[in-house]
Length: 192
Image 1 (cartoon, helix red, strand yellow):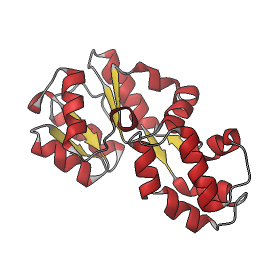
Image 2 (spheres, rainbow, N blue to C red):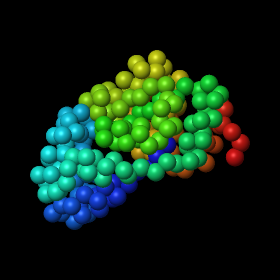
Image 3 (spheres, rainbow, N blue to C red):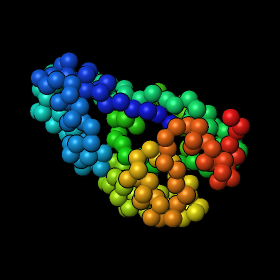
Image 4 (cartoon, rainbow, N blue to C red):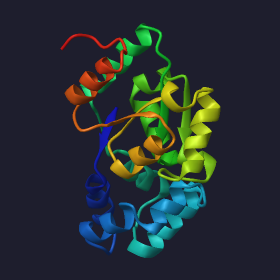
């Protein structure tokens, strides 16, 4: 539904810190600190304090929050596809490795985000994809298992766990390929 680019946050944070953008991005992009935050091991304030300590960031938590979270761009084709599926009665769910800063920003800035049936967010469950325990949460929340679930993800390590659970998995590369695959699975996808 959205693309994200941690380099945007890295440049903004680095402009107010003692580290260059590449160093900040390495700290943010799939590093142990981000993992701890996205598994709920750190609060927003604790995460901010560790970033300040690691980078020398000289701004407030509110400034940091804006810099850190404003990294998303909607994918119009996927937003439209989601709206079409919803209009045809297909239940949809968000299943994401994420954190409370990102979700707060997305909820405030992307209206489509409010139209899902439920949300399975890593920081709320203490575990991240591709750990199978988070996939179990999806099954509990949706009330569906195996072939009843169609799962799109752009990361192969995440789709592999879905395959192992018997889900119908789409490794998302482009909106057109995902749409075609959904159509092949029999979902009501609009014509190209």
